[in-house]
Length: 115
Length: 131
Image 1 (cartoon, helix red, strand yellow):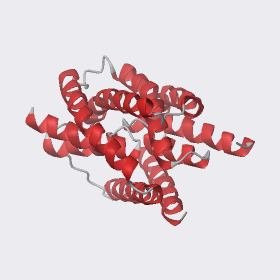
Image 2: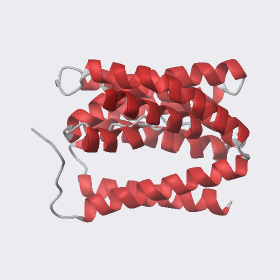
Image 3: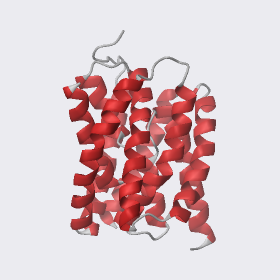
Image 4: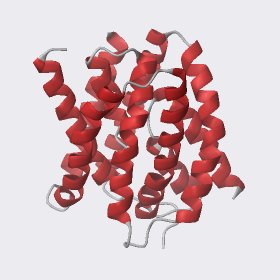
């Protein structure tokens, strides 16, 4: 339990700082520190993300930083994508998909640093 | 906002959802750039991304249910512990210079991209623990 609390605290700081759910940091920490299997780490991470992002959205919302219309603009297609994602997972090569995702993130990263 | 940026936002949103379903993340890593492209500031984009993550992660959790891999007590412990961290993160994010925060986020994306590529390019992949 102390490890889970430390993992949660770290994920919370990360989440609020960058506006991410914390899955990026939760999944590796669960694998390394809590001896999780990859599937259990991904699933449990999603459960924790739900709580973390809801609390983060609420606290930022109280400060007036949340723009609900914009959240809907990206969030609604994402819900459709999440439903599709599980179905597509079995058809796409995991390796090609991961490398394409890595390429996309790298391109966005360069754009953010340079811009 | 122009039609092009709206199409871009919707496309990135859709991609974020597919990734959430596939990799078990909430999709924020793509929401933030999409919101920045729409003209939001870094703090606003992060705050708004958190709201967009809620339904996406909820769908992911519902789809995982019944597979027996989600550990609800652990998820609850981590989620509750994260609340204290969130307050720290908000204080830091709102005090930092936005362009510095944006560059730090860019660095984070490069690190995640490198980590994913290295993991995938290794032929034999081992996980600590396991069952």
